[in-house]
Length: 151
Image 1 (cartoon, one colour):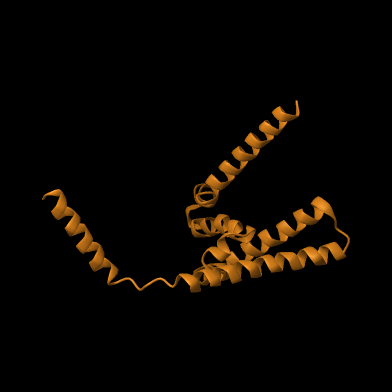
Image 2 (image 1 turned 180 degrees about the horizontal axis):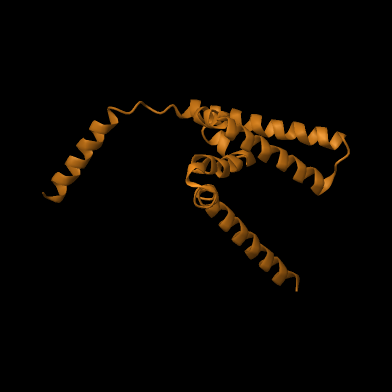
């Protein structure tokens, strides 16, 4: 098969495959992601205001709100609710801190039958592992640069 006929074959095949795919509704998908992500952040802001009103300040306030959102994301994942939210919201449910909690809890729940060590513990960081590794590495690099600048 020559190069030109291979390109025509590929183009025809892609055209054929695309006839089975429904068209993507980009605006509707982006709007739904924006609204759901904004709603999750609004819930976090609500907890922040309530805890601030209760007297928490600074790092304690930020840490407590983060822990509450991580708990809610993990709890809803355990109930199977967060996965349904993710199917409808797309990236809107993945981006906030609750999405990170979901990415850690989902594999742990899925592989629980393989045991605690080789199932839950090993599979828990399949998705979240690279995020943690690169986050810690980037934090160490920025800290090193900051330390070198401050000398």
